[in-house]
Amino acid sequence: MTHFLSSDKNPKGHKLEDILKHIRNDVIYRATKIMNDNRPEAQHVLNNNIQILQYLEDSIKLAEDSTTVLNRAFGVRENGKPRIGD
Image 1: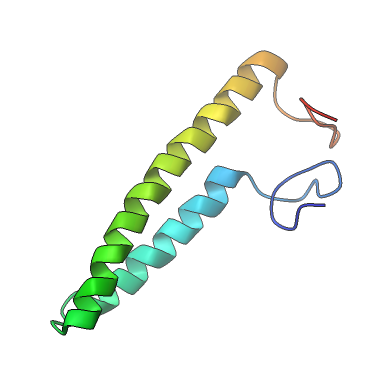
Image 2: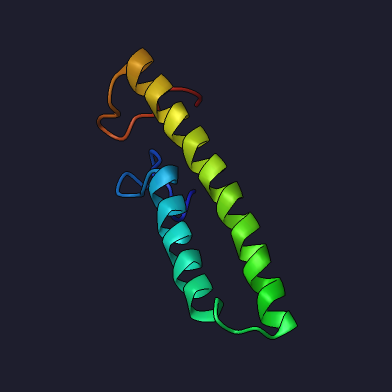
């Protein structure tokens, strides 16, 4: 069973891209809190966060693409039934 994502057993779950967008917003918020901290450790963490943001953006685009493919091929998900797979 999925804990966060929408599935047949969790129909009130979220789309992957929506969760990733929330995480992206949290990382941006944290990054802005340390952006003026010039200590090497803070700058190291900030640089890591910038890389993570790029990975998140790439992941969001992939998740949105998957949703587009599924919607186009099988329509919007209904009744909690999976559109593909078991």
